[in-house]
Image 1 (tube, helix red, strand yellow):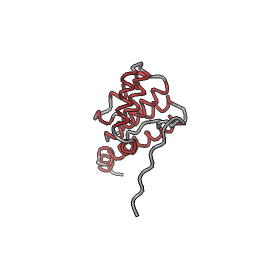
Image 2 (cartoon, rainbow, N blue to C red):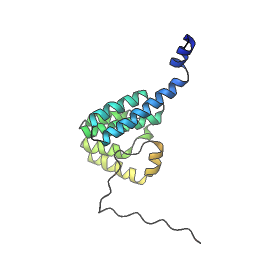
Image 3 (cartoon, one colour):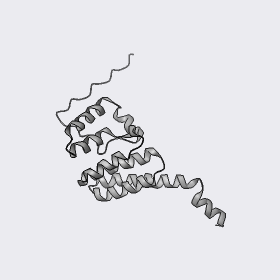
Image 4 (tube, rainbow, N blue to C red):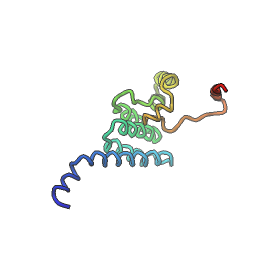
Length: 154
């Protein structure tokens, strides 16, 4: 590799793609660690993903995962800080915010956030934006089943 190729590999347009791929890989690792019950390592991986991310969507997904991991580890202030760093603010995951507010002993804020999440953007759309809740909500036996969709006519 000559000097020009070395400089382009460091500062060229592909660096952005490489950083974003690295951030996505670290985000996937953070989510897997959190699912496996290792919130401390998930915090580290999610923080690294947020720092490496170039796209707001990836960065905010990493910050949301970081907030869930911090909450799971008992670091409520760290979870709050992660959510405060989400930009633009409309990427805020309301279920995660509600969980953090409940843990921070703000039950009214938590209730309002849960109600807003319930009536706002459907879960599938949030997942499509990369801001779905982690972990997913638990359905209990007392939950009402969703009504069946009407079938199209003959």
